[in-house]
Length: 227
Length: 171
Image: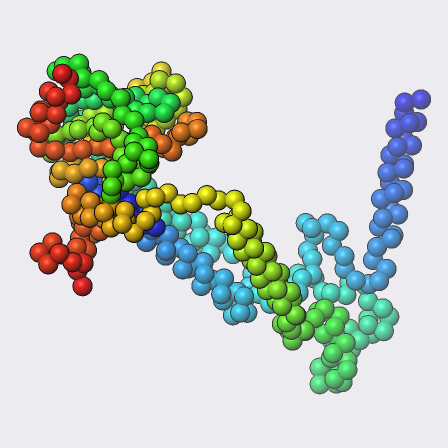
């Protein structure tokens, strides 16, 4: 989860998020370079140090066409690399379904047994001391650590979006459509997210909590939940 | 019948156009009605405008232009200034001269900031309810302890700032 008034990303809890953070740094540097150049040109123009009496400027036109094209290529290549990396065939160890409703999520683990449960936000009035307001749920999405998890996201009524920032996951839940995403957690922990597509009055009050835990714990949880 | 109507329409159009043409250009100053034509502009970063400022010269000015074709040292200072004023509208000094507009702008900005502040004070006093109980110091410290116990953001975030051996924030 984020600190109060946090502006930057949360620490990455999956390899894809690490890649995305690296790309974001790269894109930000490109943006900084361009903004610095523009600011410099603006300052020189406004202080009268840059003037032009040119009417026909073939060379500079060529330069300021080729250079931006190169900048765009520099942005596009790493971006596409990560995009394709996200869609790699990764043979998931576990598949679960996340179904968005107004206004809660329901999860189905149907690989081995029929485990289905709803996940409602804990209201602020019922929150135990020190717990996170608007983020805690009654039933978390428990997954085994260091395993590739495939999540099939869909919705029952209106558009929702299943998002967990620290895992680098945001997948729209569209009624009548199955969208697939996957993630892998190298370290155990509890990861929070919130519904990311406006879906009505309680759109801000249907969070997502993913708990990554060693496999024996996951199996114990799965057994206790299905009984 | 139709042909005569068309002709009268065309005739009316040509009369109105020529009237427009005759109406302008009397002051001897270029007016750019059509922005695709070369225009005069006073700009620091465009030192050589596309046309001269004064387009239609009076007889006196035309004589001066003839004199300009000879040696320039024969021109008096006043004649040189007149030639400059034919070519350009403002001097660089006149162009660069500041106005007092900034005072108006700053005043307006501060006024509206103050007005917004008053609106916010009114809202806080008359409209908003109390903040949630999870903002109390007791809750925030319990919450922070829980975040550290859960190892939230352990790489560079909050947990990375906590020294677990000494039980205090890292210096």
